[in-house]
Image 1: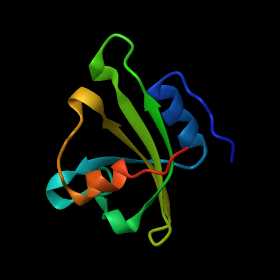
Image 2 (image 1 turned 90 degrees about the vertical axis):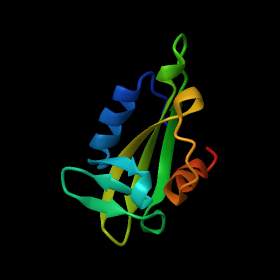
Image 3 (image 1 turned 90 degrees about the horizontal axis):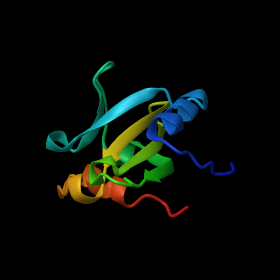
Image 4 (image 1 turned 180 degrees about the horizontal axis):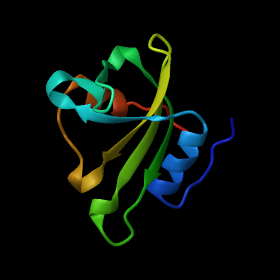
Length: 107
């Protein structure tokens, strides 16, 4: 699959949803997992792979520095999205889930 370029986080998320990444996950560092608050689905670092990621630089505001991850879980048969800050506002926790996201493949 050819890697696309997006101008905004919103544009990336909308296109990923069209490609089947429909579940919105959040990082839950206390339990070292990703969680979908709508379905209560939890994924440990071993439960998912990072298929794609897109980094967005904040031109004027460091608070705008974000990474959008497209993830999939073969054993749970689902695909979803994780949005995470990086840079100045990143979660520097040493949890396993943050380490997994920080070891995304180089594209």
